[in-house]
Each structure stands twice: as structure tokens, then as C-alpha cells.
Length: 476
Image (cartoon, rainbow, N blue to C red):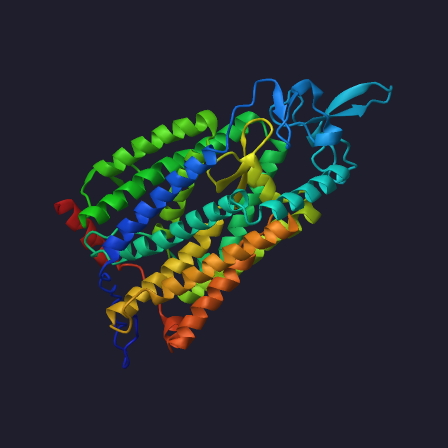
């Protein structure tokens, strides 16, 4: 059967791994999904920007729409000083000699007490929670409340669905022109939560103890630099689907042995222009363009060796997400996940405008890229399994992919609903992982293919095939 690996009896070597044929209609589906994603980004960008209107300099707009002079801002009534206020990030305190001094909010210990003007002041937190609940109740079925949630569902769903289908296209490319992808084994999956925790906690420590603007700028620049290459990779992949042919490289980057095509170079130039714009004003539209691009590259270029590897990865990251969102504050005094997401001004999350703040800037909801890429990698594996079944004539469509995508959307709806109900950040993988895993098992069991799926393994190209592929590319 296409794509299977099986060991022959009587000491005969295992059968060579063969990828299945490319499913019919895949090219048109990928092109349509690219158009849908581009159109969605453009539409929601327009809708988000339409929320803005001018707030005069030196003024602050209250929630009732009235304007006040910035000097009349009252932290007792309205909470911590906003970003456009000269005293942003500070509060007033009484010194030992009885004089009033300004103190940085960051200087207050994690256990408090939190004075007026501090974002964790208990009176302010309780008041803002009630206001948020009232606002949600009023806007629940209005466009103002629905728009950011539709924005989140649309971008996340399209990124996963497109990335999964495009991964099948790359996987079914002939060996002579197939692009090498990172194939995760079970050992890699076990280490995922450990490595993720180290990176996350490391960023948290850097931001907390070395959080100068220069350090933050370096972190942002490094991430944006990688996103620039992602734009080039995605443009090359899209062009290859459009032509139904892989482009020939024009040069190779020394030391990395990375071959670059003319289209990829054009994409990197576009990405470089976007990067310069992002470094200049951190605009949320560029952030989302980079974020979607990063998600697509991750889903397409990182593969799983088996369903079991994917299950291990998802379950491990399930506990990772739960701890760093719910448990980290009791251990480290801060919600580490939220602190990093808000502290790093880089495309590590998608941003969804929900309203305009008093300074005349947009307020956003957020979804971490990991909540798209991690389940996306697993869903892409299931799309490849669909391709195997289609190749065996046991299926006529992407039944696993489509079913699990419904589960993914339901999991996001659950996440958003609970987040709005409790007015608190939620670990999205807490809801995504059970939905996705249960859906995959349910479909496989209903089709009588669970045992086969359990034993199915994708292997890396043998060294001799990889060498043949390189020789073929050189001849071209």
C-alpha cells in the first residue's frame, strides 16, 4: 500500500517507504485557500482599522466617549495611567518623610500590597472585571462583540487548513524535487514541552530582570528577521503550486547549504520591507501577516513520523500550556505565558482588534501562534493519512482532515466562550488537544482503521534517495 512500511518475513529487508500519489484537486484547493486567507486578512484589517478615530493630542477619551485633558486623568476612577500618559507605568506613593513620590509599578513586590494606579490594585481589578462582564453581555450578539471572535476563528482555521493541505502537496512531490522537511520522532515529542518551557521561562527572566528597551528591540529584531525568510519560503511554495513545478535555485547560502530561488528572493525583499515597517511602528496588520506566514511554514515544514508521535507531542504541550497559564503565577508571582505574550512586541501571536482605547489606539485579543502550529502539525499528519487512503482507493476525500478541522473550530469556540465567561486568559491547548485527539480516534474507529493508523509510520528519505535528489537538482 502507498506510504506504508512493513517488515517482510524470513529475514527479508523492510519494504521501502513510498509516498502516495498526489490527490486530485489538491492544487485548486490550495490556491483557493490562499485567496481566502489573503482576502480574510485584508477584510479584517479594514474592519479593524475602521474602529479608529482621532483623539486630540493631550486628551484622553473615556469609555462614554467624552474627552478629558490628560492632566485631569484620575487613576482612582479610571485605573492605571495609560501608555499615552507621561506617568505610564508609575503610581504615586508616600515617602517616609510624608512627601508624595512617583514609583515604578514594577518596583512593587509580587505579593503586594498594590496601591492605586497599579494594574493589580484589587479595587481596580474588581471594577474592571464587572465592567468587562457588562460590556460582554451588551455586545455578545452585536457586531462589536462578534468581530474579534470571527477574526480569530477565521485566521486560525484557514492557517491550519491551508498549512495541512499544502503539507500534503510538498510531501507528495517527486523525490527528485522534494524539499527536505523536519520529521519529528517520538523522542523529539517527549522533549517538546521541556524545550518550550526553557525558551518561555528564559524570555520571562530576560524581560523581568534585563527588560531594557534595547534587549526588547534585539528580541523583536531576531524574530522579525526569521519572519522575513518565512515570507520568501511561502511565496516560493505558492508559486510552485501555481506552476505545478519547483523553481530552480539561483544561488546557495554558504555554511547553511540553503538554496534560494528568484521567487524566494523576491519574497524575502517583500518580507524585508514589511520587517522595516514593523520595527518602525509595530503595526498589528504586519504582525498578523508575519504570524500567518510563520504558522504556514511551521505546519508545512515540520512533520510527524506517526500518530503516536503526534499524540505524545499534543499531550505533553497540553500540560505545558496549563501550567504556564494557570500554575506559573503561584510559583513565580506572575502569569509567565501572558507576561511574555504582552512583553515581547513581535509576531509571536495573532492580534484581533476589539475596540479603541482612550489613547486612540486599538485594544486587542490575542492567540499564540503555538495554538495554531502545534495542532496544525498533527492535523497535517492526518491530511497525509487521508492522502494514503485516497491513494489506496479507500477514500475519495480528506475525511480525516475535514472532520478534525470541525473539532478544531469547536475547540476554539470553547476557548473563546470560557475566556469571555471568566474574563481571564485561557490555555487554548487545554481545549484543542482533547477535541483534536478524540476526533481523530473517532473517525479512525468508525472507519475500522484505528489499528492501521496506530501502526502507520512515515520515514525519512534514505541517504541514497536524498543524494539522488541533490544530483537531479544540480543537473537541472
